[in-house]
Image: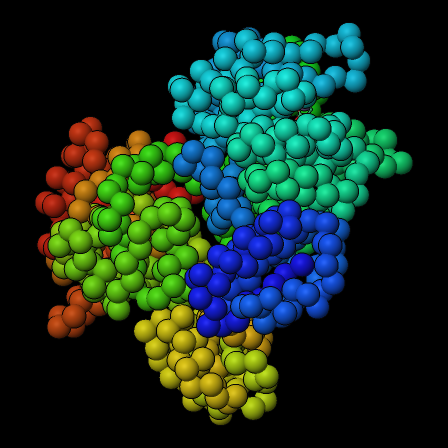
Length: 628
Ligand code: PEP
Ligand code: MN
């Protein structure tokens, strides 16, 4: 049952109300909605609904008709994000859990851990208590296995996930692991569910072998009802009449679960298929379907594995999978970065009150999304009004980093930011790609035919030029950024105005999407860069950027390109643009696949300085698209 409270309800009224409800034995959750405060009331309801309506401070009572309450979206509309060390599950960054089926030996486990970490795995899995179908199969190393997992965490920084098979193991779990897994065979072991509900550690709850989604969510309800709302659901395939694969992966569970509950969901394609070759395609499909992450079994010698060898990936396959997920993630609005743990550790060292990341625009803008996707959810962000201010803040040390867009796949380079990079002594220290989906956003009830004015950023008009050309009568009004455009439409409250912005911005301002996906080409990506006064210490880099001009004589550019050709340096971008105030002279933007911060590559910069007129080294960083 949901109690919607009066808008002007006082803190003391809320406290009295909560106490009264708790005295009846109900579980009470306070939830801040978009513009109202609600109380979720769960338990065996003893009174008539009308009784609750009469309580002071209550404006409305809404019954929750579903059998699961605490896990339901009705009660908690925002997605739950679960923190495991520095890793967040359920946010914008994909979480990959990898490792062997069972912890076999210390050396083998560490070998696999190092490998999966180098490919970008964030959490490590490995069973120490194995629920095997046959009593004669390997049953796991028990506490010794947990000790090995703890060693993996200490060495690699990856949090560890392992299965609990009995409440008797609770103390051991508290001592050694970060996420406790309840396996498919135990999904309806209610005593175990209650036990992990009291553990106060994140729980990975697998779907039972033949459990319906409702039964699965009811199992999660057990855990939440004990006070633990850190539950990650894991779809791992169900029993069907199909025998070709070990189980049948029910991918529809991903969007279904996302709608029904606020809890994050990940997919385990290893147990779902049981066949190594089928793991990659199903993992890709899981991410495309909107899963918050995946859990896969990886082994360095699967033929010798003590359990689940046939479904364990070779390390090379895992590496390939990570590369593929890296490409798919931005398409579905997420990121998969290979240096998440290093960045997160760096970010954690910041003082809490330090303004860490400056971006231009307001929450809901694409720059905001880029900042969150690159640095994670908890970082202090500072929104400023222009790209120039981003540079100013970083240059003055008032922000440690800045996030600015540099180029778009439809509308080209953002020259303002290249100019600012020339002007300020700052470095590019990272990059990320966002897929940009534009929507026409208006107030509730606005329709396409009645629109007269459309607000957005000029670059956005360019990216939607085809759609806009179908509506030549519209007045296009430029705004600083897309979220500001939405705010303006909301403020004016006019049915004839709309903004072009992301669906997140629409949601944030409580606005309706009139038409989805109006960008000229769906392959619309913007590359953002992270700027800083100093380099981000996140391991070796593989990309460098620069701007230069050459003298106006034959072969001048050729002389520069020769340096790259002879040095065997791959050039991934070359763009020219006219120089301000010097007609017919050009600046060149160049990106190279090389770490120019390394001493052994300093000669490249020396040579470039000799062969160019203006030369500005912009920095070396890790390519978003490559693991090192
Ligand atoms: C496992 O993850 O090792 C496992 C036993 O999975 P499931 O419970 O899904 O069979
Ligand atoms: Mn297994």
